[in-house]
Length: 101
Image 1 (spheres, one colour):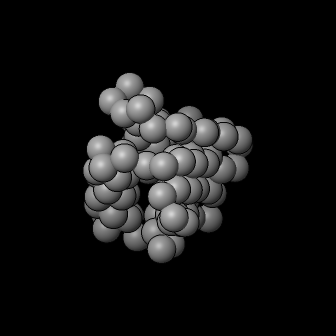
Image 2 (image 1 turned 90 degrees about the vertical axis):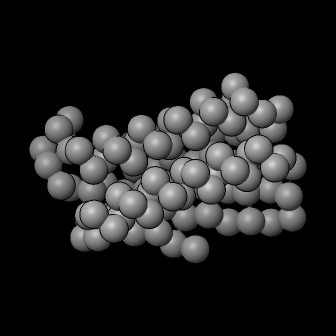
């Protein structure tokens, strides 16, 4: 199985979905899942603390989703930074992480 990260842009809103499992290591010890999760949580908390953007988040077992409404320039910068990190992980672990754009 593969972790998939996707971004949808509609008007001034952005939706980011991370779904699946890397299956790189045993549950609770999977460094790829851990890396992606860390980036996702950092994005969420950074948007919350560093911008005034309206952020909705949904955490589930098989996916996590962030919707940012009327995203600011700083919010866009944080989202770009998140995808730079995801791209680097996907580059190192191409069989375990993919980006859907």
